[in-house]
Image (cartoon, rainbow, N blue to C red; front, side, top):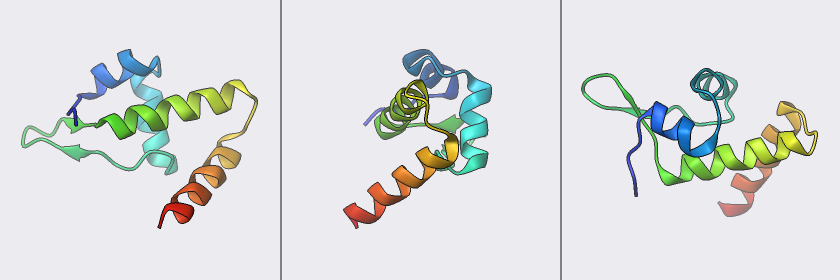
Length: 78
C-alpha cells in the first residue's frame, strides 16, 4: 500500500489539491493520516475513491448522490 502526499495523489487522479481537501471537508474522502511533519498521507484506496468520484461527476451525479452511493457501498461491505 502506497503512502502518497497530496500533490502525488492529485497528479495520479487528475483531481486538484484544493478539490481533494474540499472532498475531505464534505465527507466524501476520509481525513487522511498525517506524517509527523503534518503532511497528509494517502493510500491506493484514496486513489480508487477519487477516481470513482470523478467518474460519477462525469456522469452528472451530484456530490450528495455520490456521498449516498459511497455510504451504501460501505454499509454493504460491513
